[in-house]
Length: 165
Image 1 (tube, rainbow, N blue to C red):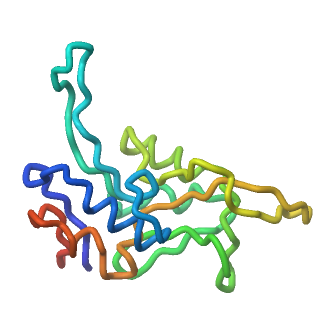
Image 2 (cartoon, one colour; image 1 turned 180 degrees about the vertical axis):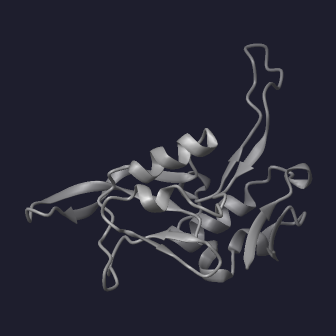
């Protein structure tokens, strides 16, 4: 099984991983639209660095809490234990995500912070069970780019690796 690993101490906080992710996922170079977040050290009112710095990808849990939390059966699990969210073209037996956010809450309950992200705008039409179309926010998360993670390929410090476990 292959896993994405973040070597936090080696990260230079350059945001290249987030930019590569947003480019692959959404066709834009915007770290805010990435499924991997680089959290820079915040500053206090005097401009001194405080708090921690880290990189927040999906943890790709051995027993992912997001999967059973989805009441619409709109998530897929692959052979590497990577969960992806079905946003369009649901395969047989699956539904399209309606952005109910139950997976986000389940992830947050387990880890203290969710690694399933929410688009800043209502940008996706969703048809409810009653047939009504509403605009919903897109939920997205790391799916390891289908086995070829852009973040690991671009990291100049090899702080993100895709390894066999």
